Image (cartoon, rainbow over all chains, first blue to last red; front, side, top):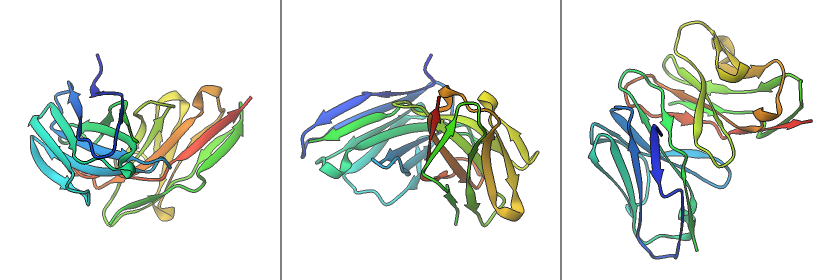
Length: 112
Length: 114
């Protein structure tokens, strides 16, 4: 069973579209994260939710909106996609007190 | 403030040779330190972590790292490189609090030459 799963794995879309990426973890973890990895492999935190509450919100355009319906899910909705949004987006989760993050396989977003 | 610097964005070693990937950190509090590996088209997988116990940490696949506070370093080593070790390696630091932020280095791409 996949611990942290993201869908879709690949997403190709046109500029201006709205798209969502879903993330689910079956580890019983309390905290979930979204990272963006650019073409140079640099990983940057975007958001973090602990028990459905936003705790980290880095400087990210407000076109990006995370939604956590329950602590096992953290979805990422992106409005009005731009070319610069092309990247690999990683979801991760961690257990309170353990401080290890477990990563999904990533979603490769290409905006044309 | 915390940050991580990985020296050398690309490292090449011969199969069977020593692997040394460098990581230096800065942290205003005692750090938690991690090495992750990313194989092509996959997510990040934890190799090992340092959480203020033993300074020499052993991880999976024969890797180990040594925490040196005086040098603010956490270099990753493996005595003998294998072809399957070719991947991207990321060093990360965190404060150790619940749900806190990880700061990743820019990664080192390891190539193993047969």
